[in-house]
Image (cartoon, rainbow, N blue to C red; front, top):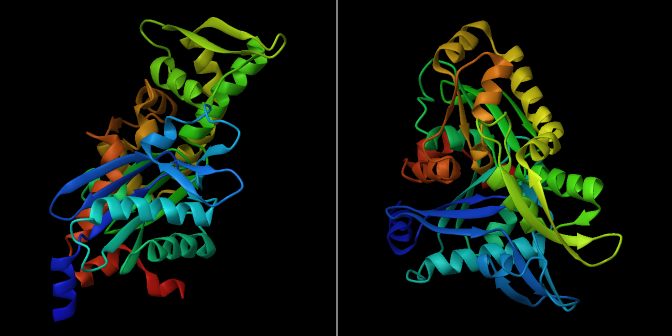
Length: 347
């Protein structure tokens, strides 16, 4: 016990939302101290890391042949173990540099659908990156805690957490997930849908960053009061020359329809599988939207129309998961183990 206390004093215990698009780090007693894109730039053909986070994102689509900017996380899970470990090591060192005497205890959020192998990969990456102890918490549970839902009460709370790689839909009551679904359709799939539409409709190739910018600026899930237009630049696939064109929000909404329908189907199925008493609570309290992709224009209105249930947007959708994981850090060890998966379960 005394060693745990000393380690706690000498280290920066932290919570990490290890997302497909962005990584957020919460330090106990300080709050959120880091928000960086989950991107690493490496020297092609070697294991030399050139930059991580915001600097690496600036290189997306603009690197020379000997440099490649990659996302080591795909659909909420680790796609490249070595690069993920290096990215985590960079973030942990950046946050923990002032207290290097003891390794930190870390809580990391994971999608609820991950396999044991995928969970072990996250745990091992964090341990290799310098963690003392690693605990894994399911994203919908972390998001519910971060959004301030009364998860310990005997009432139904439904949350839809749309991140970069996965959408987590869960009904929570009495501190546990009663029913949940995880679909690997979220922000990244929406970006891909926009890029694919521009390529098919206009024979123009656009980059990943441009597709994301289109989604953010004029993308929507439901008709807007005033439809928007945007000028974009790309490469003409016929002539090979740069080309500028203008697209409207109606076109983008049509491009997003297929991936959004997968999310809506997951929400409907979760409602269908929810016990009647909890379903009555959800009708009264509504569905809570969290995650960065929840900021898509009129997504709450679309879900309300499709389900007939009130839908509310969390106060700060982008930070719900990391804030929830951070609040778990403040619990006693006994309470912590009730909410998370301790690393020993994966040996």
